[in-house]
Length: 108
Image (cartoon, rainbow, N blue to C red; front, top):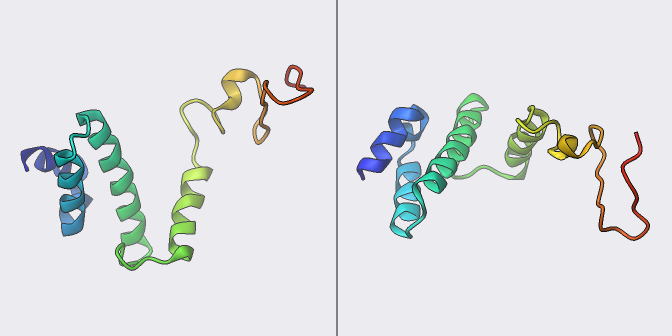
């Protein structure tokens, strides 16, 4: 489980939750790529930090707790812009599907 130890060094919150290490080891044993494991660990760490901050048991969290986490994820800036569409010239909150019937270029 040495790979898991590196991840707990990177995200200490993972070391505070036994099930986190178990889950990461399962993903590793399933042959997931190291970068995939790293991405899973980052997401799991962010969830666990929210659980600690909100005083929620991550194993028994309910829909309301998950909603808090999802709201956090959707409200933070993304490296590609607010919704990933900014690189297409689409404004924040708008979606442009160039394959949709009658779709033309994005209107600004």
